[in-house]
Image 1 (cartoon, rainbow, N blue to C red):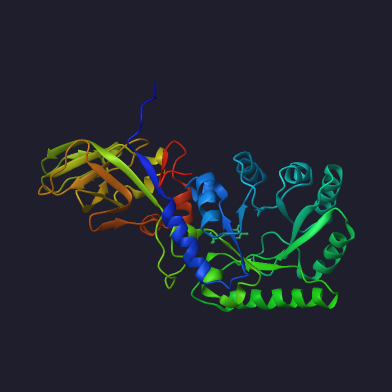
Image 2 (tube, rainbow, N blue to C red; image 1 turned 60 degrees about the vertical axis):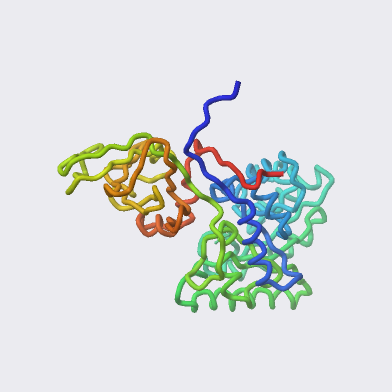
Length: 373
Ligand SMILES: *Cc1c(COP(=O)(O)O)cnc(C)c1O
């Protein structure tokens, strides 16, 4: 017997992911390495199917935030290089090496822990020296890079796989900050070159890779663009990969003065149809969309009214639009000529599309088109 199937689901188009990989690929020189960033369950899309689709479409490697995310990809049988973008602690070194993951380093303690773990295992560990050129979060200060590099090259068990930095503001209208990070990076690269060291350099995220070709360097780490969200207004066309779909569970014609939902935050001003939908904030349809957001039913974009509750929400549908129980509702995606994007949600919620996509609830089943290999 199969269990009950939920009508609310996220439909992930792997062909859209592949198209987006190719859009980015075309913006790169052929030898430039492309990491497909699949951290946080591939921004909510499902790490394993997205990773496979991206590799098949031309990504060279994968990147995750956490060692356990890399481990899960290895468990699924993925053999490509996997870079752990987040800082690791010395006690995580053995599991990182054990899963054959690339690590970032910016402290002697982690360099030593990785070298020890690699020596124990009898296989080299690949490390990327991270320099802080202006993100101000993690990474070595530029003046400390040479000393850390010396430690890396002195460790026989380590393979120096890259010098990396992260951009703080590549999607910002004002380009000066990114240019400053670039100049800082060039100074570091020059300093290393004078010592005879020339590790592969990577700096750019989606916005950096598509907007600053000079910053593509030897590799780019692309997340958002893979999912079809434009990293800035001038980005090349990308295909949104995720649609969040649900159904109408009740449709009722109500008079003016009808109150809806917790706290009665909405009262109809005229007769209309209230359509109840089987999705709520536990699915990632954030409560902040109450009386702000919109969804699509009957090919029409209609407002979300009343408070979004944990498992349900309500739409105000004009009387002339026919809706009935079981009708499909698009919370994110398109239907007919209407569309609601992660960018729309981000504007309504005063956040960024990243948070919208990562916030799609774990209980929402993901289905894939075409079905994953
Ligand atoms: C998440 C992340 C990326 C990808 O950023 P996008 O803006 O999604 O392309 C690249 N590099 C690092 C270090 C990251 O943490």
